View 1 (cartoon, one colour):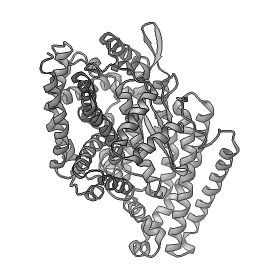
View 2: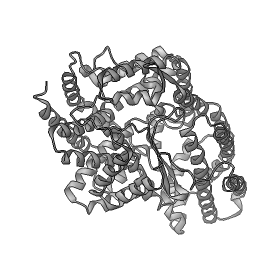
View 3: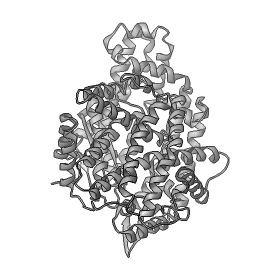
View 4: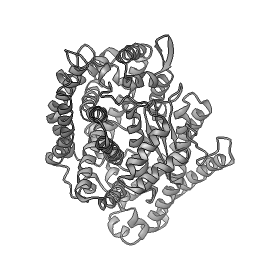
Length: 588
């Protein structure tokens, strides 16, 4: 069995005729876009809008295919110079679309009777949300010349800072027990069953950051200051305001979510304190034992066993979901194993033109790794449904991006807990569930606090590695309270999280909490309504690219502006914590 993904169905290679032809085709489409933008005054509104939609569909599909091929190549080999050069070349071509795209968007803004025109043509009606969102976001556009300049400067600004971060972290050699291993490899040791391995890996990881932390601090400052500058220039209140508008999320909804999370922290602290006691710690849980496996289910799974586990539990929910997972396994959609030069973490990439996804993981055999694959397959399932839409209706918000993935996690974990034969096995799976929930509620809250503080301070002063380390610890203490040992926090967490290093995407933290709790609510409705509700979930996922978040939620009867919904979802996690406390009361 192949444990690496195949990109053959995207392109056979950079030297292939198909790739070269599509690069030429891109040039042609860019010229067509420029010509269209220069001649919008020569035709009626409806004809122009239809031409804009059709050309953008063709361009978006082509750019998606080319950019994903390059990005996926780099994801498993960050030192690949050919791919790096191709990405630079592609980005330069894409920049050429900025000016004509801005002209087209401003043309749409100028149409006063947009609703009337949309209702007169089926293609325009299909893309109603897309067109109206352009009109809404148009108020934040700069002048044509400024938009072109911004796109060009970003290539040597935040884009390059992000590439520096990626290169530094993916090639970092960690000295561990006389060996040099990758950062993703040493971070995976946090899940090892041996407490000495976890502790040594923690110190090795922190020590390794000293080699790159000064440089990474420049990346973070450079990116965040660019984000602040651009947010102000465009007329947003601040970067969070921009993120909320880009996310199609109201501040009222975010406030209800964050307040509910804050109010739930004490129950998470009780769980962490109990775990600390079970591991023999008297001063709270040291960070290096945060992911310590509990119970007797210490099995290391093979990739084949992981696949069987996932298909079995997906089948209990939906045959379509199980079939999607099997297709991903059988068709080499997944790159499983860690290696030097491969980026850390996990993600799922959407290749719309061929209606396929690709998943990257750094599989090391734990139950957590199986859950990660299930999570990413949830994204792939969301993609499968979205592929039936036009690519222009396929962009869902950050907050809804995690809905299907977390739902798939819940399916796998709940089924596994229910099927456990012994208390030890049940405890192992349950504690993994609580680890993940704690990360998504408590740790995500700390990341939200940290990023908020970075934005608050970085335009006033340069935040060096010492500032950032202290800010990270402060955020962790506020989120974890006295449940963590203050002598063993993780000051370098800002270095290893890719979410901080994007000029176009800030606050990629609260969407995980939104996704978890939104999914918990959906799962509760599934339990109430049975298998017939799966069709409602599919309809919900299909709507994610063509509605704002509140309307998507309302389509299944949920009001997300009220804390009651979030508290109900959090109560499901509280039930898990109470079960954990009951199972472990005789173990301390």
